[in-house]
Length: 412
Image 1 (spheres, helix red, strand yellow):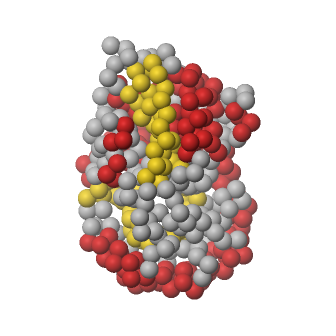
Image 2 (cartoon, rainbow, N blue to C red):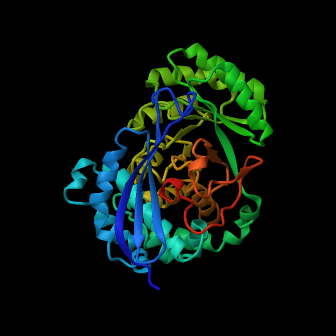
Image 3 (tube, rainbow, N blue to C red):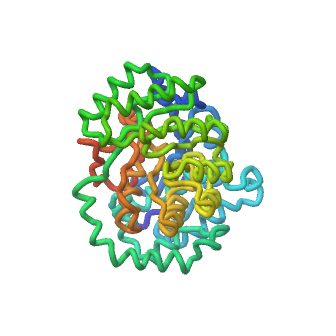
């Protein structure tokens, strides 16, 4: 039976966190939340799409979903996805809502949720996990889901197709990741409000669970505290572990230069979001000043144009696109293609708690040839998902259930 979208529903779902979990140098009182798109169909299947917020404004994203997703009603899912790039552009370039961005903020978050729901429904309709659906698509079919406007100066449709075809011939060499699992890193050992003792306790637990890479929040009002905690983490985990430091945009450029030099001796694998994400030139200046130390950027970059600018400026050593903030799976893949062209690794930020990105990380490695470095792991919402990501021994097990692993118990 053909699967036809019959109705659009949005859901404002918010989940309280406890004990300082989720807090960083800027976002001191987060409430992990999803603006959910639910695509009801003429059958038993429904597509679920997620956009991530920290609570306030989640209802605004849901209202935008209600207004923007109407163009999908009556569409058969296979026919829709066969020309999805055009439908994506129709929603993206709404002649009135575009003014509220363009391509950022509430409206773009709504697009993210809508697009992710379409891919989830498509995978469910074929009875496949999202990673398998994406791998089964021909380069031409995959290209048809993308929208390359404003980035075609660095990635034309012809470039993208050539890259996809070339990597398609090499993918068999990278299929072993499906059995091995995708490496993870623990991002929850050192939220900004945690005491030093709590950080140490969490580090021991993390290492016992098999994680060899961890991330610490820095950017507090007390620079000496940040430095002490960073060296504490390094001393606890040893020289071989990867330690990332996440500033969450708190520093000015002069502060960033100073702090990065002071932190250099504990050998951070990267410095994440050191200053305002719109300031590409500040990141370029910082990257040059602290080389070979690398910057990780992308959690708050709203669209592929900003990612293009960072790549052009050689201002990031790692890119962290998030399909629950960008325009969904489509824009995530577009950013990944650009990054591959520039030779920059992609290590996603996981506003989806890794549920969707566990599929996309596998796709990036197998289909695009990105190095399988690791994927962020945040466990705080595991109990709210129908099929939570399985992470054992510090490794993501390959998901097998149809869809994008986005189904939430609250919607059962």
